[in-house]
Length: 268
Image (cartoon, rainbow, N blue to C red; front, top):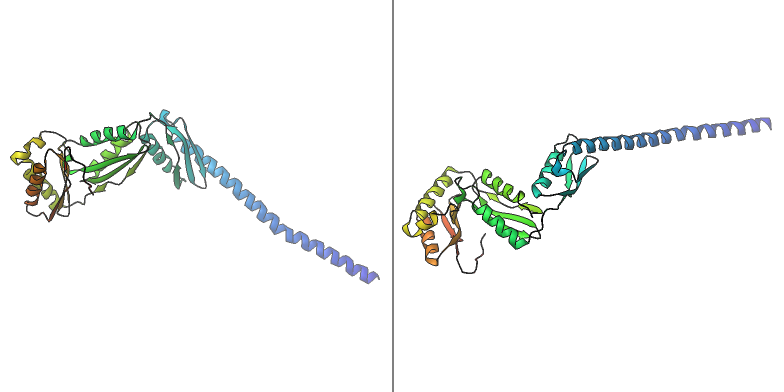
């Protein structure tokens, strides 16, 4: 009986020890996990503070930053789309921030889509005068405050200037950039100049050269020419096409010129 009891006691003791030993790894894992969560939380709090410090300007005083696992979320309001875009760029440059969710709302003045489009179209028409704007054909549309830019720019400075014009205009809530920048090519550069001379140098079309906006826009990609803008008559449209088509080195010409007073034709 004593042997039996002793054996039973030994079994009970062994079972107890086994339970303790089994529980140790679980407790350690749980503690490590908890420690990792705390460390991550502290890291996120530090990143949030560092990111917020990058927005220490009056235009961002209503913007809040939170960071979760390296992803920063921006909320709040600003007066211009430019500030929204710039805030996202500033926060993304924070060391440790891997991505940005920009949920900032533009709370500037309310402008109707038609009014905003008209204002932007005029600004873009005269943008970069003297810097080859005759070779840009940038389109603009507005839907619920969201501006969509398309068409062609002959270089990146002109494309970036168009984006800046839109970003700094009150009433713009968001911006979608679909502008195509024409490929760099010495041949295309020469064709642009030659087509401009052929078109604007023709007596019947001289009048369009007076306006610094240069209403006949010339876009060239790999020897293919496209004409954009607005002219006074169908005759002027046809002449511009013939003059462009006669330039040496031109492979093709697409005539997207609109005639004043006539229904707008679809362009690329």
